Image (cartoon, rainbow, N blue to C red):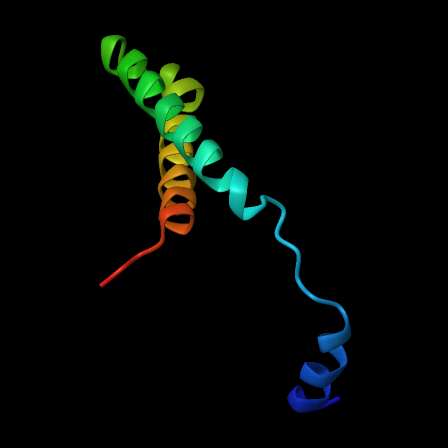
Length: 77
């Protein structure tokens, strides 16, 4: 199957995102707020045990929250 055939066949099934456009701002803001809190707690007690418990989830929440906020508000040049 060529790429063009695959493109034509997939036109019958549109893509529906997991998080709708109306909810991306709320989810992004919540993730950024959770990242801020987790980063603050990690900064208060930096130990080897807190890296997987607070550090990694905080960085993931910040990354996904930033992407959702960019998608929610758009980028205007």
